[in-house]
Amino acid sequence: MNVGNILLIGLAILLLWGAINLDRTSQRRVVEDQSSQLNDTMEFLRKVKGREPKDESNSRRINAYTETVNRAIKENPEYLRQIEKDFEDGTSSNSNQIEKIIESTDKITSNLDEIQSKTAEVKAKQAVDSQHVVENLTKLVQSINAVEIASQEFSQNSAVLSQNIAEVNHYLS
Image 1 (cartoon, helix red, strand yellow):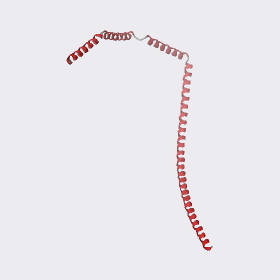
Image 2 (cartoon, one colour):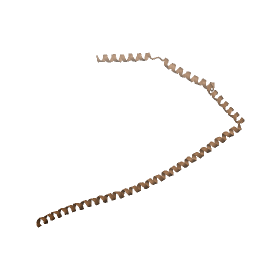
Image 3 (tube, helix red, strand yellow):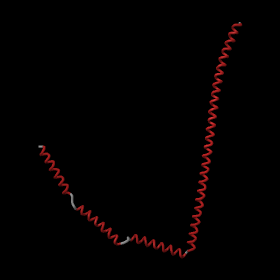
């Protein structure tokens, strides 16, 4: 029974594989190859034909523009000289402004360096001053502690003295 089942499953797989392969057509490969050949042929014909009309139009425009510029140069040399002079004046003005900007950045840099050195000095002075303040506060706390100890001793001495006075008064009376 197991062998029969295996044979039936194998036969089903073979039939399914055959049905899938029969469903495929060989036309697709031919169409793709024909399309590829057609594209190659079209590309070849385009190259043989020469430049595209768009390229020719652009080259005509460029040639017309250069011709117009050359004609304008010949007809108006003063205007061209004026344009060159204005361009030179503009570039020299821009160069001067760039030099001024560079000088101002140098000044700003030197000012920043001065500010940094002054802040370093101020920080150092503040550190010294704060150290003196801490030392003085420490001395003040020590003095307050000494005064407190002295006042406690005075209180004890005055208590002993008042007790002695009380004993003397009691003894005298």
